[in-house]
Amino acid sequence: MIDIKKFKITTKLREGIKDIEGDAIKQQLNQDDWLVKNVQVGQVFYLEAPYTAINELCEQVLINTLLYDYEIEDVND
Image 1: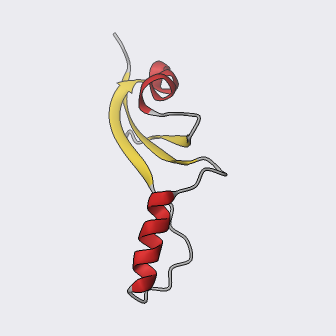
Image 2: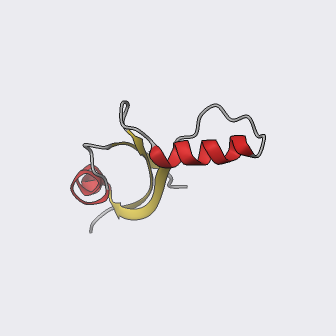
């Protein structure tokens, strides 16, 4: 039987990659007088998958590792 677990995968752009979306959000917030210094945009995936295949799934399917760093969190109870 395959051991299925719950995971939370969080992505963010790698260091040195310009976050155009984050910059646009920051600009809009500052125009509205929120005085925000930095905004970084990422993604969060919640999924259930075999524990042994989670890294392979991330690197081959979910995440472009040339652009994004990612973190896997085990969210099982």
